[in-house]
Length: 400
Image (spheres, rainbow, N blue to C red):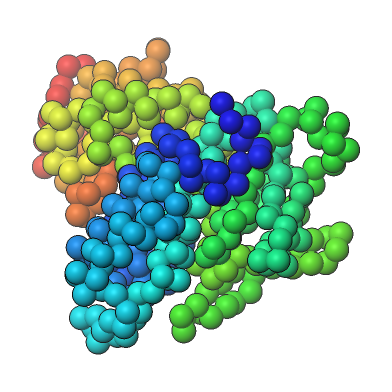
């Protein structure tokens, strides 16, 4: 296996890493007349090009970028494949889109699309790999490419080390802008001692919020202030997030039930879910997968049940009797639920958790595209009986 600490983008593009391919292949396609209207984390889950409204153009470029990742194509090879297709579709040179807005497709723009998407995909795959190995290598070092093309603010971060769960990485995990070539390497505590490096810990005072103009739209950016040097580093507008954290989980609705269920359970039993439980990952987290019968009963288009960070915090405050291990067991509790009832948009499941009777509430979004867990608590038979007698409640399953 290659020594990952020495990998740069040009070498990474020669590799066919499954996690990078999985990440990029799971992206959707978003139509956007303005890159900044598809903001920050959305870019980790969708492929877009500024002022491109034609789905067939977006799909052509997306598919060719994925092909470049899978086959390790250079930019020249990528350009050779895609440019004739874009010319044939009338999307080359000066273009006026359906909204009457002018845009240009040039080799320079095509190279930015190529580099940015491959770097983002690689760093998302790298993020997942490092998170899963965080117990062994908990320290992450920021590495910039120190040449004449490197932005001074990025160069100022070169060599700095923070723990994987430091808030620094929430906004400054690379790439930190278009054509950013920075990367991260993970280190053991023993390696730090051998390199004579003392890891840093950020404080609230080390950050400030500034406003930048992004395509005529004001954007709030988190700027890091190095307490030792006073150097300030702000990601480019639209990159004020962690693209690795935002995009490392695939779209589980594209997998079969058994494969998706096993993958979600593996995630829940690993470091990422522990970080989510501790509030260090802010994204919605998948906690269970529905079978086809359950999808039909709940009238949802998605088989994935998510738990939001806000819901988790509220539930932990209101129901401290529910333990971390209970959250890790949500998949089994739902599968083995004895009673399931529908109350309007709310689905209520009751299951035995050891010597306790537990209640899980689920609700689909209005579009039925997503399903979220809203409540998780201990309950009793009297509560179930009250729900059974409530007008309008539909009993889906009742074996208690």
